[in-house]
Length: 298
Figure 1 (tube, one colour):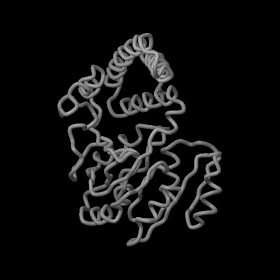
Figure 2 (tube, one colour):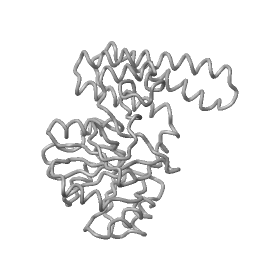
Figure 3 (tube, one colour):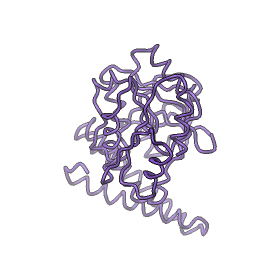
């Protein structure tokens, strides 16, 4: 409800519609929305159809010049009006994204580079952790960028995106083969491929209360994130690229499985977190080895 309230507080100088697409939730949120926000358009899916398909359902129902993809676990602090004004003035911008903050209002480094063999290697050997301020070694995550200026970027996070409808008609909807994770970088790449700019806009701020679901099922979501990354490589880098990606990820998860297994033996605190990490790395390794010897995409 905090998300809907924050959107309504922002919308004092433009016409808007709020569309909520529910993926078969059982927590009573649909009933609460119907009671508290009768003006909100509520679409209830019979099953969990995934992030991409649910958003596409909402996009098809929408009518505005700009479409905002908004996660339910976000709260807009400021800047929607400024985002619209910026899009009105810069007609070559297809996607605009705000500054994303953690729940304590610290910065989330969510601007990304497109994945490449180099950035994947930097992640696999932890160069991004050793040199977080280096553009060369930071991997896909732009930790060297202070997020205090407007800037064209490769990828913006899908938790909050403002998309120009004209560009959307050219690029198409989210790829529904991405059930959860990966759909945002695939979408941003497709916008760039059609010569539409993707721009980070620091004058708008959104809090993302992230990973509530993944914290309840860390092993499952670690595997889903890996699968989504593989899907991206399969779609945009071909057979050789995806095989090299798999080998790099095998190295990445093998090293971390060993490190956390040793850490689990030496540390008695946070034993539950250690076990979840070990299980996640082991599960991902099993999935990776399966992909090495098959042509299947999932």
